[in-house]
Image 1 (cartoon, helix red, strand yellow):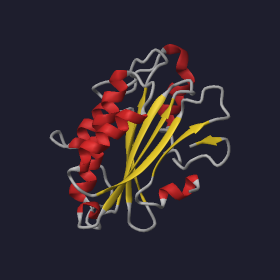
Image 2 (cartoon, rainbow, N blue to C red):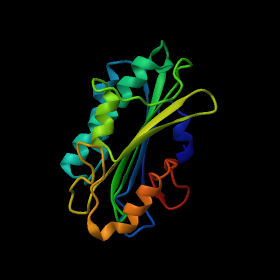
Image 3 (cartoon, rainbow, N blue to C red):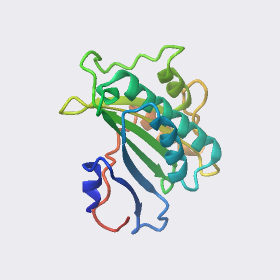
Image 4 (cartoon, rainbow, N blue to C red):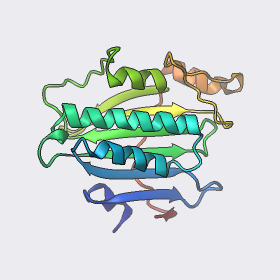
Length: 199
């Protein structure tokens, strides 16, 4: 199976590691799950397992975010209908100046939701907002919706986000700080690389 076919095969799970970089510990991972509440535990276990050398506090938060996004997909989209599915993608990038974990869940959409993220104090989205560097959502061409969050951390494993949801950047990262003030980083394309890939 080609790496790109894994995104189309509902039974596929793929982990891609970039082979042509000095540090091949960057991970791209994707798996499709049935839209059942019982899969939330499996998602938690899988996300924890693929994060590799991720600092424990970041891994804990990534698992919590994945769990909240998956629960929302099952409860509030067509993914929770009979024969519904959802897709979880994770990118753990340790080779950047600011390492990060990107978590996204693509569900089958809900025509009654306009895509506006309204984190209420008692909702999972407010939890995600409070523990992530940023979050957002995108609509797909066939009605599906992807909700995502990013967790930045320093090389020593210290989270660069706080309970207020505002990134804490060290002084030596002023360029990154200015970029964030201007606009958040665009959602990365979590498609597997086509060359130099070790499945």
